Image (tube, rainbow over all chains, first blue to last red):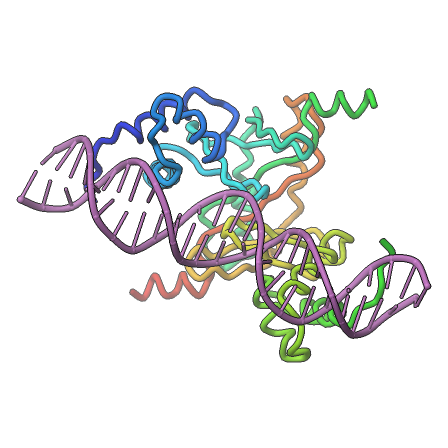
Length: 131
Length: 131
DNA sequence: TTCCTTGCAAATCGTTTGCATAATG
DNA sequence: CATTATGCAAACGATTTGCAAGGAA
């Protein structure tokens, strides 16, 4: 299972690093195909999974039934707009103390947590007000 | 769209109320079929979705690719064991102040958040130690 | 040459849906 | 009677996988 270089994998990672909007596998596929029209969707999925497994990218499960991917693996939280589906990084203080709170009355071992926020993004909020 | 009574829906809700382990649609189907062998999986899905939509049950998306359902709709948090997949209720203090923290530097409107914790449940933790 | 990676297509899996029939109010 | 709900099977959408061929070390 030694990792070998692959042009496709490089392309996928490079593309992901240019985006801050947490694209899905399909969006990655559409875009990467412009550089390499022969790349297959299966290859995109395989590489996204591989990159996520080795920690070079993050896989986001945001309850919309589709996985999103993020080249930014630093700890941060996401906001999901329930109107337009956009996924936005939040600038907020660390809340990892909730892990300690969760473990206080629990006899297993808590390794981490998944948290995301939802509501209306600023654009959709404006549209609501003006309608 | 007036709701009509249905024996199947009652069965599903009753079954769910007897369980604290947050079963999936398939588990509901398997069990409810013992009372009504003719019930179809489609009916189980339709009713779980309906009950979740009207707020009588909660749909849990815990990143394992399968929806779980919970008859307990009171606010509480869940723990997911990454080894055996079990889903357990946590007894912990309210952490909804994280919504305010998330909104501090955000110009959209945050309506809520999804949070769950993961790690090893007490049983799996024991097995790890003894191996 | 070894064996990891790809492209392609078929397969999987959870979930949804169309339709004719049955049950409810 | 007007409608909602059901059973069945087919359809779906996202993701995974088997396989033979291609590419990296």
